[in-house]
Every structure is written in C-alpha cells, then in structure tokens.
Image (cartoon, rainbow, N blue to C red; front, side, top):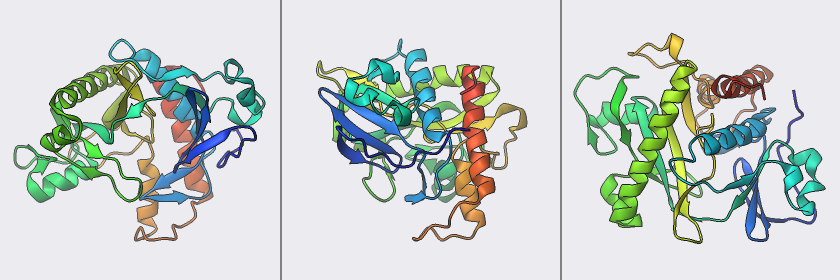
Length: 296
C-alpha cells in the first residue's frame, strides 16, 4: 500500500485552490490537479486520509476520459508526471500517480447528475414528494428500483454546504436553453456508455455526477473527475436486490460508517477507525481493478 498524501505544498508552483480533496496549481496555460488522499463526507474533511485514494481518482478518471472521448472532448493533457514541466517533475515522488495536467476551462456552475437507480437523495425526494428533482415517478416504487430511462437531475455547485438539486427549467435559466439541452444529451450518453461497460464487469453505476466547461474555442468539454468512487455510486451486480439499500463500492461506505457512529453531521467529525480506512482503501482499489481490468 502506498503512503498517504493528504496535503501538498509544492515549492515553485502557484497554489490556486485547495478543495476538500484536490489541490490545484497554476502551470502557465494549464492547471495541475493533485488528487490527495483526503476524504470528505457531509461537508467535512475527515481524518485520517484513505491510502491510494488519490491515485484511484486520477487513474480511473484517465481511464474514463480516454474511454468516452468519442462522445465529448475532455480537458486531460497527461497524468504522466515525467511529461509535465520541470517544476512539476521535481516533485515526482509526491505527485506520481495522483496528478493530472489539464487544459483550463470556463466551468459551468452546475453539476450534471444522472440517476439510473432510485437511491440516495433521489429516494428520499421520492418518498417525500413522489418525484425526483421534478421528474414525477409511478407510485409505490421500491428503493433501488432501476430507472429506465435514467433521470437527468442537475444541481448547483456550492462552495460550502450542500449542493442544491434544481429542475431543468432552472438549469436553462443558468446556462441557456441550447447549452442545457446539450449538457443533458451528453451527460445521459456518457452515463449509458459507462453503464454498459461497467455491467460487463459486474458493476452497476447507480448514479454519477459530471462537470463540464467551455474551452478557448467555445466547445463543451468534460472536466474535473469522471465516474470515480467519490462522484458515483457503484454496486455489485451479483448482490443487487431491489427493495433495500445496496452494499456500496464507493465513498458511501464511509458515510454509512459515520451514520453508524451516531454523528449528527455537526463539527467536529469523528476520526475514522483503522478498520473503515482499510476497508475504504481496499474498496477504491478493487473498483478500479474491476472496471479497468488492471491492478492500481
């Protein structure tokens, strides 16, 4: 197992943002996105970090960027530190395997969420209203029902606090009608292609969130991370059973553990146990292996 990297402070590089998980540096016309092993849940950064987590996020995003690039262009230039500028290469011991050099994008201030199964906040919304983000659904659906066709349920991105689900008309008001239609089309197409590939490896992608921006030529480009255990819900197809919650193969296992501790989601968060840290690290590596066919 690799050592855990939860913080970077890279001499000679300009830090422009330190998020809950990623440290972002400016490299001329590009950005350097460093996926640390920090883990967040319920808007809190938890301790300790999850070994190998950043490497999984980076490697799995690269896999999906390359696999899905026939649908939409992406912002990734390289994940090979040795192909990056010298100022980056001198930190190769810290950055190798967890770093993306990307083109800058003018990001849309929304998350493009697609739901293929009725779970999570969508399930709670359905129980309360009979709808999911404005999509009216039939009565009496059980938890974890497959949604066909999948639902496009965008959300606004929050700098702090929870993201807020919005309906399609609200999305149109934010980005315009033509862009909203295109974002919905691309998001659902990407999800459907990924869902089919994952199913071939015995994995169900219950839902995922994607982010897009405009490049210098005005094209819509896929950015951030793609179909990782941080941004998606993965289930084992062999144990799937509608009518109940499923065993997660993603960050949900950490949220479940926190709920089992009786935490009310107010600071401070409880420290993660050695057992849940080890289980999460193994799960992240396993989902990478199953989806890509390669060990990390």
